[in-house]
Length: 201
Image (cartoon, rainbow, N blue to C red; front, top):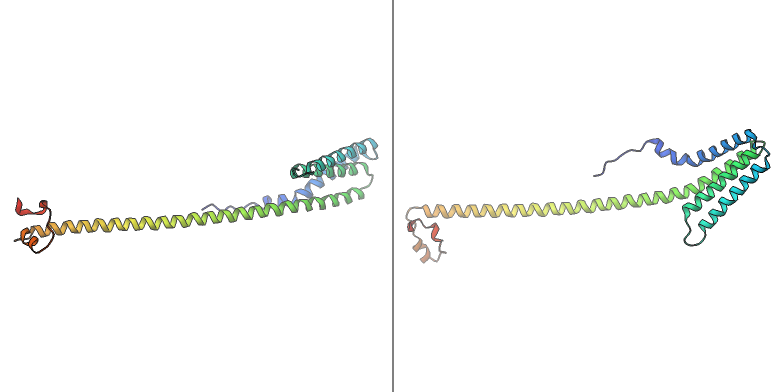
């Protein structure tokens, strides 16, 4: 049986907090960039627009067609959103617009993550169900084999006991006084092997 291990609460909370931590980190870095000269900087804003558009375009190409890679597409779109958030947080002079964009970005990130979490949970449940069925099947086979082995052992024991009792009876009968093998044969009883007849000695 597999050991049951309890996961630490941080291991359970960390995946749920990851989208908020990621968008908050981008917002903080954007505001630090804002305080270090990016506020109202057209060149910096244009750079972030180009990078965000490029990441979004890469995501669109990655998700197009039947052979599209959802992991690459998701990463590209997430990068595009992070670059857009960083650009707005760095360019805007107030905190209101960056906070609004942070809230929208965080909500979108949680929406995308919830879809992945549902898929992962379904896969985990299916795996656990399959593992449980395999364990039950193996346990059933082991029980059947144990019963079969026990029956074979009992048959062997009974056969050995019968052989021992038969040998004891033959020896005891041959040792009785007045034992006459010829009379037994005339009575229609089966003839014993010559090795068991003490009168032939």
